[in-house]
Length: 114
Length: 115
View 1 (cartoon, rainbow over the protein chains, first blue to last red):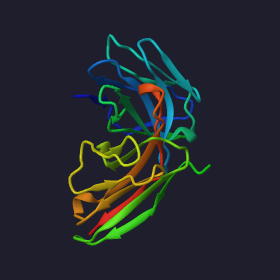
View 2 (view 1 turned 90 degrees about the vertical axis):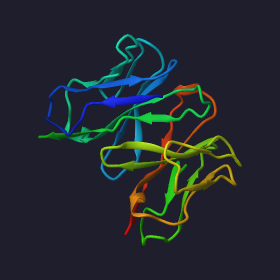
View 3 (view 1 turned 90 degrees about the horizontal axis):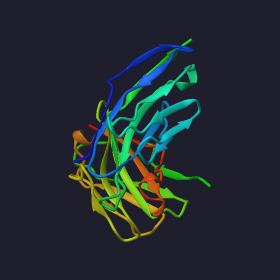
View 4 (view 1 turned 45 degrees about the vertical axis):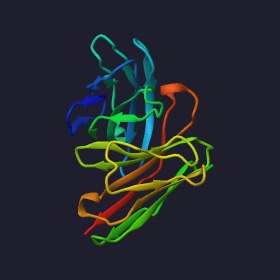
């Protein structure tokens, strides 16, 4: 079956530090890959996405590249801000079942301190 | 345009009680989903619907029932609540088109505690 593994948290960084959150996946076929973000007390919001090998998704200074050879979709940001403190979820969507269900990783909590 | 809304926001139940969680979307989306979020577990799919009048089981369907009588609403029912159903419940919806890259839009969540 499909699965997503992302690095365990929590992660604590100082403002302006470089961020990497690792994500690897197992899937049959060719899934689409997503990063969702959950700010405290809120629902999930789409951060970025990619649909095929070597695609790069980007948004709000965050980037992730779909690497088929390593089955990875690592999230990066060059300079984090306090406002980036949130829980980040890596997810995949596979069309084979026709329902386009999302399979999520367990989430990585990021805290950015001034 | 309210997007995806969920009612109620919080609820406390005693073991054995029943309740219904309501999800509503005003984006004319065909697909709707119910997830539960537990610490250290990410989000897991409970049930989903690919259109009005249809429902299907997800990864963790036991103890829950759903109905999609109207396209804009997706109800999640707990017939006899158990402490293991203490969780945060999220509803999501998406368009039928766009393939697997089309995003899901999430509601704000319902925090349920079963004592």
